[in-house]
Image (cartoon, rainbow, N blue to C red; front, top):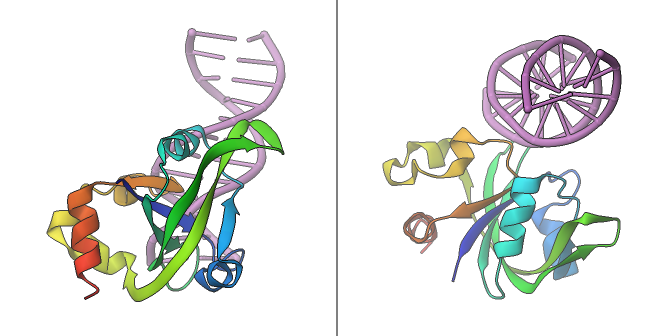
Length: 132
DNA sequence: GCCAACGTTGGC
DNA sequence: GCCAACGTTGGC
């Protein structure tokens, strides 16, 4: 099982929207590095749902991959995956993440613009343990 | 709203 | 293939 962090601007598509839709095609990624990570996503992989570009920047929930990558009908150079809402988790701000020494290898800090990021399993477990 | 970081485009 | 110009992302 792999872990990922996927970003969304809540003004465009929030964790509430994700919950309401239950299953969502993750579209709009137009960055090759992010796309390559999407291609590595496997069914049942867990994704941290991250709110970007807002007052409360950070992780807000969990979703899981239910359909592996397939071509984006709007642009065949890119792909979509389907994800399903799992749950909200207590908000973990970017600031809080930065303060946890074991999480310093998250791409989030150095590649702030990457919208799909891998999370190594050690880091994932640490984040999950923040929410008993 | 500003601006730094950085990815993309296009002229040469 | 280089690189300047430009556009976008995202934190603050």
